[in-house]
Image 1 (cartoon, rainbow, N blue to C red):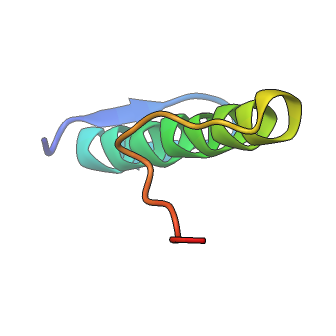
Image 2: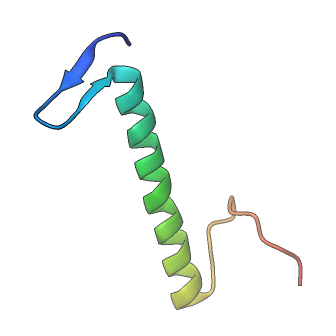
Length: 52
């Protein structure tokens, strides 16, 4: 985890890259859930829902 990932604009540890990628995936999952709610008014069962 102490290894570095370096390019022209970034200098991150492997742990930072792992956390960044997890947040990025979480963002896309939220976008997908929003799309499902808007188009078919449903979301996966693991997404919490309020009672009507």
